[in-house]
Image (tube, rainbow, N blue to C red; front, side, top):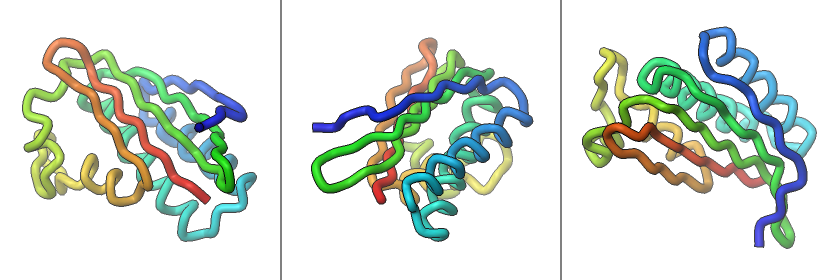
Amino acid sequence: MTTVVSTERLPLHTSEHVVVVRQAVRKRAVELGFSLVDQTKVITAASELARNAIQHGGGGEVTIDTVAEPGRRGLRLAFDDRGPGIADLSRAMTDGYSTAGGLGLGLSGAKRLSHGFEIDSAPGRGTRVVIVRWK
């Protein structure tokens, strides 16, 4: 059973908010004793998902939870936007697929950098992406 130890909510509306999210995730990862490699992985995933929420979802918020289960602690990040949703989720999860002219590695890359990954999206109701990284 997962227990939430602490929670922080941050807005996602501007590129400055991406920087704030990166800093908040780094602080939590350091507090949990993540290695430098694991810090980099979770910060990179958070950065990509924050940018997606702003660029494709028109903004939203991120919830940063420090979580615990028997024998382990970690970070759970939930990115929520109120955008148009993702019309073709399986295609959006494919490496190289981009609607914005990028590398198309945002969602699939965030999934690879995480120990847990869930996405819920549908046209007209926005997108929620939840990732977990354990220490």
